[in-house]
Length: 225
Image 1 (cartoon, rainbow, N blue to C red):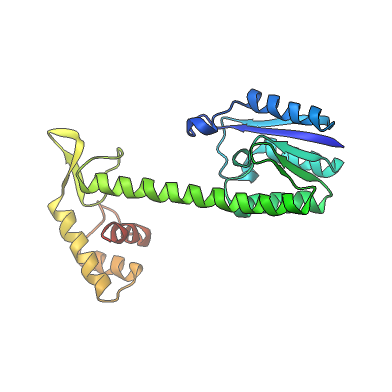
Image 2: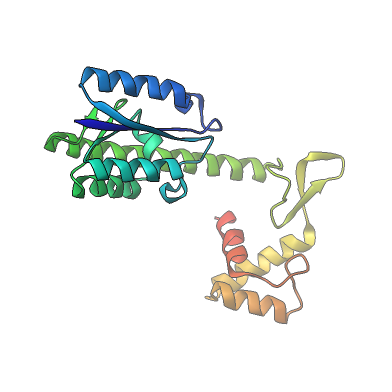
């Protein structure tokens, strides 16, 4: 059998994920030697996010080659291949329909077997669950810091302004806080986001000089929960 190697490196991820492309290739080559797989090509996406597979040219070329030659797509780990369950399964199904396979070294997955395909889907689901839990904890921490007056970015959230004595902190803006109370009141009265926006504009209340967007109103209400 033959193999196509694919690696991705995103240095902004945490240290556990930051195996360089060269290091990943070394592991993949050893795997191919052990399983007597001839290497067709080695593709990579370096310093790129794994959020969307369609925007990674290296991955797309690797998939095309693997499908064309009915080869094994060898990756260091599932996290280098896809960032959500749906995408991972779509990649696996694309390979399967073409008569190609997938091998992930870190998870010891080999889709040439029924058990390997089952384990692949299970681990992909668990990986996505872990990422969602991390995202939730991060969001909760940011909201907690904001509630304590800590500035988290250069763009201040609605209802707050920078503390003139310490730009690392936020203090409440009385006018915007009054508008937040009005938004909350309208929402409790059963108004939708767009209706709330139109009502505020009719009352002469703008969003920092601009018309209200329903997405902005939704975010403001979410922060009040």
